[in-house]
Image (cartoon, rainbow, N blue to C red; front, top):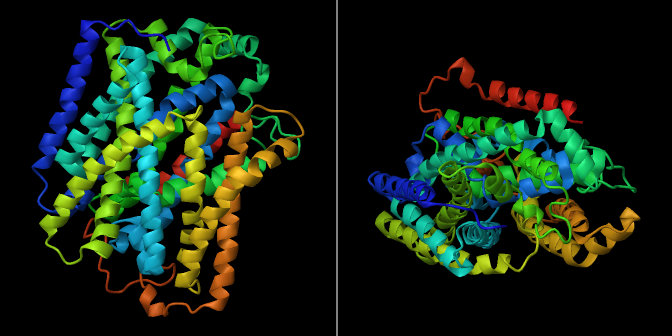
Length: 559
């Protein structure tokens, strides 16, 4: 990335943005009276706020730089990460799983596993989630530092430290509320920064038809850049994402549902909603912008190929990760450039803040309060939450340097998802629908699924991906396929071990599963809607099936 020509006006825009970020944290601090206010926003936020925060928490480094890079390198097939790999799982979370989470009044995903299974299952999930949180936070922090270093000229170590300080300020001050309200602000800043790039770029290349013509002419992939399902045949795949089994089952089912339905970083936003109706609608409201975000991430990647022949290829002096900054440098005048840079910074800060705010909740409630210091005053756990926030960001600084050792952060993050999210989804979905599943089946299923993903990633997958394709592909293509099949392996091994262990161990009595298993309601839970009368347009089914319908239409158009 070449350094952008920012001037005093651009720096002024950045100063205003960062001032707003800290101010929101200070204002949110006034509403914090106990640990639940700090860690779960007192379960008081409206659906539109939690819905925007839900999607903004995901709109981080991978979404902006990673998806634009994939758009430049792979073209339209990148939409699978959105239309197959996100929206269906978000709808499932809203319609099926939120009643279990919110209705049972659990404070985290690990807490649900403790109540459904046992303490070893709970502790394993809490510890692995904490590890995943700090590793993922490091990815966002590293990506943020790259942008600051390249666009503003600051050294990488200084960029990492300054980025961490601002995230630390508004989370430590305002807790989850500070993070969520900042995520709402960041969402609109991100959109304001990306929309001008798309509109100006499309006009410059002659609209969609001109874009298609120029990309086909300039890209080595040619017409395949606009073919989302081409080359996905089993045994002879040429699509950069692998074959249709890996895309549909690995990405579309295991990784997608594992991330969106059991990753507490996302679920936490819904749990902060003011009632069950708002909690159910949180991921469904977030699904609508998610449908159209490809227009702001993938299209810029295509525009770069259209206006810069050879972009990202060996000897060009650029990489595909430079797509968004290159467009900013090419099209945006000063002032607007400052807003766009603020949008990039906002994206990475939102991603890291989401990781840290979920880490402090899980560590405080699921590890510290449960296993280390029990029965302390609530003010004590509020202080623990603040301390863990500081420690989490300090560890995130360290994991940012770990992330810097990987040439492709997209592959790195997908491998983390296959290790940590895929086994949890298998255990969770089986335990939620199968009353007979035993507590020890939950534990051994999680552990075996994690080990299976690890083994597939480093021992089996690379060789299988090479020989299975029948062709020589670069490491990135193989790595993506390994991630998808590694997730499938984790899910299958987890499920098989779960069934086997269940057959040889004793299940919990049904009366202990009230409100935790499908078909076993809890008559003492009360009304989770808390007297709220839902309007017709707030119907979760209406929102969910409308989102799926839009995805179906767009998938047919871009097939």
